[in-house]
Length: 158
Image (cartoon, rainbow, N blue to C red):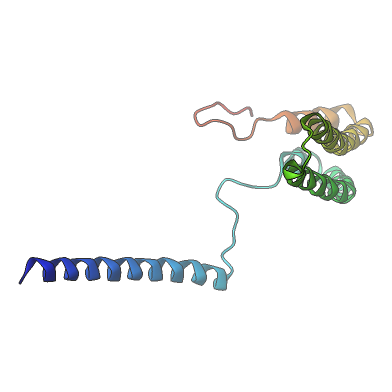
């Protein structure tokens, strides 16, 4: 076998192997989606504000989560508007004439709107805590301040 024939055969084998590997990987991904295996990654659960209710008595937990859900609906619309405004601000960076000072001011205003929306949710949690008994409020405080996640090896609070 000549050196040229060997090179062609080697290249064809490499191309065929890459094609087969891609086909198998694609088939696995498509198979998972068809079966509905869109589970969240391991270790991820509900957001910390939601999980904080786990320490409350069932009726209080239900009321807390209902209040959070209502606040979340209102905040969701605000956050969509904030994301749209931020996207528009990033797109405007390409406009001429470019004004860096105006772009920074626009982004600062967007950050303030986002912080205000998050603040309203936190204020709602405080308002809910104000209606709890001291023992339930202390339990909610522990639930809200419990450390979840963080760098590997870091000790978690109980």
